[in-house]
Amino acid sequence: MIPTELRTDITAYFRTDIREITPVYGGDINRAAQISLADGQTVFAKWHTSPPVGMFPAEAHGLKLLAQANALRIPAVFFFSEKYLVMEWLGYGSNHNTDIARRLGEGLAQQHRFVGETYGLDTDNYCGLTPQRNTPAGNWVTFFGENRLGTQMALAARNGLLPSPRARRLEKLIARLGDFLPAHPPASLLHGDLWGGNWLVTASGDPALIDPAVYFGHREADLAFTELFGGFPSAFYKAYRASWALDAGYNERKDLYNLYHLLNHLNLFGESYGSRVDAVLQKYS
Image (tube, rainbow, N blue to C red; front, top):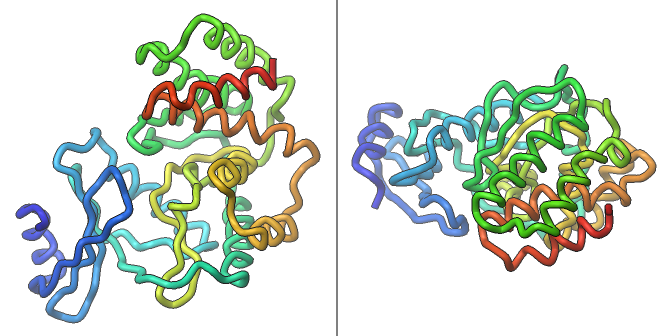
């Protein structure tokens, strides 16, 4: 059930045969499988018959960057191509555990202390299926306005999802971002797409991050997104704040950071997200 090219490359890379292939479900973009090899190893593979250009190389780059922070468990990348990614199999554990949530919060705070010299990244990547522009900037307001809200605004206009009142409010908000956001916060290494489906618990009981859309930016952008769709366990937030206290005003900024993801969902899924986008624009108008 895996592509012939992927099967051939796995056997060549590991120099052994494939013993068993078990489908892994949960994602809505790629197909995936747990692959047991004849030598006893187990690996994870994900693939797409016609992926956006550079999607898997960008994900591999992001995973390797997160691993450099040495903060949370990140699956090791074995190899990849334009159509697939093969990495370490982490197994399954339980995520209904206060201690694991605490360790996730502490680990994320540690990851955010891994900082870059500028905001952005040396390459573009994807947030879901949406291209994510990461052109580096020395000013966070400039970066977020141009590379996050600005690119989503342009995409929404092309998609016919930007009626005039929404467009005017978004233009005004981007022009006034400096009234709401700091210009030079630490350029933390961000996961970039940190919702509840992009962290898991390994078979050994460690919290791990998967499916990143990494870049260097204000750490509040990561934390804000954890709150957008249901939130993380309370122990996660308590541990994060104990490890690195948030600056005053986070609660006033978080909806602005989540506007990027709401606009992305608007572009991906249509006008069903329009009212949520409009509510945020109204809040900051």
